[in-house]
Structures are given as C-alpha cells and as structure tokens.
Length: 263
Image 1 (spheres, helix red, strand yellow):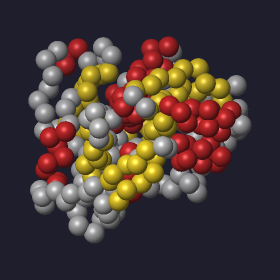
Image 2 (cartoon, helix red, strand yellow):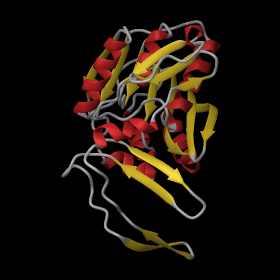
Image 3 (tube, rainbow, N blue to C red):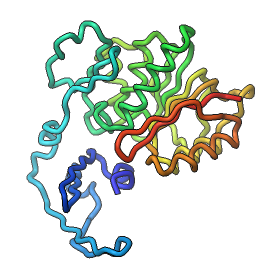
C-alpha cells in the first residue's frame, strides 16, 4: 500500500503501525491527493476496514514533525534543515535536506538502505568517478555521492518539484550536482560509472529494460532500492537480463536494496 501511495501523492506519506491497524498519513493540498473513501476490502481470509479522515490545513508544516536526523554507519548523518546538527556530526559527512514537495529526507528505509550500500561501495574501492541518481527526489543520494568525492554527479527526476528541491539542496550543501528533468519510463539512464536508483520495483524494471549493457554505455555498478523485499527476484531478473549480477542485498522492514555489478 505504501509503495503505491508514494507514486501518486505529492507531499509525502508516513506509515504508523499498531497491533490491529496500519495508518497512512498522506500530505498534499486540496485537489492534489487521491480520494480514498471509507470501504471494506477482502485481504486473504480477512476483512479489512479502511477509514479516512481529513487532517487540518496546516499539512505543509505538520509533516515536519515526523522527520528526525538519520545516522548511516559511522560516515554519514542526514538531517532536515530545521533540525540542529547531531552531537559528533563533525566526524561524519553531513547532508542537510529540505525536501519541499519532493520525496525524501533520508528517513525512509529505502533511502537509508541505499546510503548504506553507497558507503559500502565507496569503502570497497578508492576509485571515484561519475554518478547518475535516477529518481533523485530531494537529492539525498546525489548529494551524498558528491560529498564522498564522486563526480560528475547527475541527478534526474521527472517531477518538477523534485528537480527544484534537489538543485536547492545541492546548493545548500555546497555539493556539485547537475540536476535535470527526465522521464525514466521513456528515456534510458545516462552514461555514468555508478547508477543510484531509489524507485519502485515496476519503475526499476522499466529502467533495466531501457538501459545499455555493460561495455555499451551501461554503468559498472548500481545501487537500487524502493523495492519490497519480496520483489527482489523480479528486480534481479530484470537487471540480469542486461548483464548485471547482485553482490549485496539489504533489508529494512519490508523494504530491500540491491547492489549490482556488471558481468
């Protein structure tokens, strides 16, 4: 459900779970969020009750209450712009993010998993080089890559608010990142040594279908996330068909992230 909602809502989604319920807070201005009526739905052998409640008009500020700094290993901290620096942050690379209407402050499992694998990739090889961040959202992955010493870094997204937020965040962090708009369902990813792609599984499959093979302009390595853990086989198969094999897999709750290598 969360994976589906992320694709269609403009202001972000938060998930909260209890013993007998799952609650999704969906943020967006009037007219830009889907209508979700109260319904009952069959789910396996059970009956699920779905209730919706409209929240107050201060959605643009209320969603900030959910976001806190995220620490990734011993090398990175990602914090929203309205939070103070963490104690000891001087020992880590710090990425400051103001997502605006774009997806991502680093708190979602798919982003933190991607950052874990990016840090692993960077520590495995001192060689840097070009990076393309496909579906950049607020620019977290692209900015982290640039601050790790990769370059040139290109951040792509189809949504204009994401392009604007990523460019502003790159400037905020003093990171050299080129940001551009691209529809990844119709256009292949650009030439780069490393691809980062925090997307949904169907979009990852579409990206794989359009990408060049290794040696023909395809990347040497990829970090892909946004898939549910149970969708691992689907995504691995799509990239395997283009000549890439998995070398690492991380999970966070129901979500997963893959690191793939050419050959």
